[in-house]
Image (cartoon, rainbow, N blue to C red; front, side):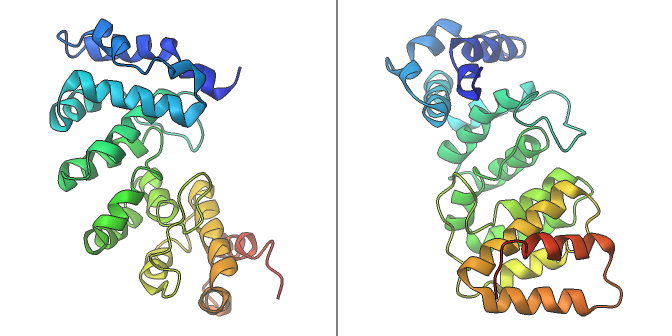
Length: 243
């Protein structure tokens, strides 16, 4: 069974059940009617977008909708895995914030925090980075210092210039200093989920603008207090780099 097959009417019914448990006025029938007639013809991302748009149609406005959707998220994911198995159904909620939440920054930040602790907000956060760069850098810095490793990973993964399956983020390609300041906070993180993100992030820069990335990695490696976690990140970042 492909991942996209989880995003058919089976997911519409699952979301309806969860929403009706906290909002009895939500109409399952209207939800289904609001879906595109070509809904099942789409691949994964198209299906997620259709479900997201249908949710917005039924709720009528972003604030009401996200208030309800946050109530159905359930327990946080305590593991580094499971975002696309146990919590796959959260993906349309992340898309809901990405598409409809740009005009409500504070509420959307609260929503992305909650979402990434179950699934991921690495894609949903990127339009906010583009529109609210001056606000988002402090926000990402704050998340990088969180006790929650999902938020720490988001502070790196969401800023990656070449995040797979996402539009390229080139805001910092020429001058990655603001991003590197955030990665500095994560360079000795002990959680592999975070370590991989930091390594992959720097691997992106080794492709796009290698000089500052190499300077950073060399400085990290030369530090006598560098932890084994940091050395792993350095090795992971440079695994495909050729001088």
